[in-house]
Image (cartoon, rainbow, N blue to C red; front, side, top):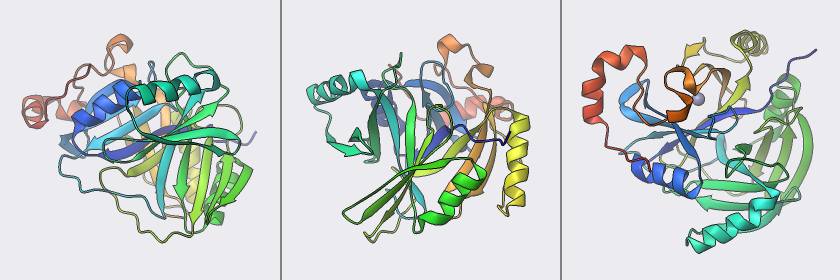
Length: 305
Ligand code: ZN
C-alpha cells in the first residue's frame, strides 16, 4: 500500500507578548495550553503549545512569542491562515457567544459549501472557524485546514497529490482569488489544505501574526524516515531528524516557499508531565535543565487561568 500523509500535526506561528496570546487562545477559543516550554534555539523565549484536552496531533497550534517581534503579514510563499473545525450543531452558539463577549469576527461567508467566520488574534492574525459535521468533546475539533498562499498553485498541488497522497476535491475563484482544495485520504483532523492564489499584490513578512511553518503527521519514527527518503529522492532538501522532545521533526521548503515539517505522533506531550496537568509548569529539555534558574529569570511571568 502506498503511504499517505493523514493530515496536519501542528501549525507554528509568531506572536507578540505571551500573556495576550494565552488569554486569547485559552479563554476566547477554548484551547488548552498543553505545553509551556522554551524555544529550543533561543531558550530566553517561550514556546507555547495549544491543543485539545489530550494534546492530540492535528489540534496543536504553537507560538514563539517574541516581545520585540515586528508586525508580520502573510504573502505569497507563506501559510496565510489555519482553520479550526467547529461541530455543525455548535456553530451558531459560537457566533452568539462571540457577539455576546464583544469579540469581533468577519463573516460568516460560504467556502466550499461550509460557513466560515474569521476572528483576529491579539496580533491581528486570522483565526478561521469552519462549520463541519463532526462532533467534538472540546469547543473545537482541532484543525480543519490550512491555507497556503502561492504564486503558482500547480507545483505545490503536485507535491501534495503525487507525494503526500492528497486528492483535489474542489476549486473556487472569486474576486481575483483562486482557491484549490486538496484533502488527505481518511478523516483525520486537519486533512484539508487550501492552495490560494491572489491577484492582489502583496509581499509577506515574518513577524508577530504570521505563520512560521506547517507540520504534517508521521505515525511513527520509521514512517518519518520513509518520508525523508521519499522527499530526498524527489529532490527536496530535507533536514536530518531533529529531536523536539514531544516529537521528532524533519523540515523542507515546498516548491512555493512555505516551510513544511513532518512531525511524529510519538512520544506526545505527556512524555514529561502527567496528562492531567499538561501545560501548568515550565518544562525544559534536558540540555537546558541546568540553566532553569537563569531561564526562569528572563522569561516574562505568565498567568494561565
Ligand atoms: Zn514545528
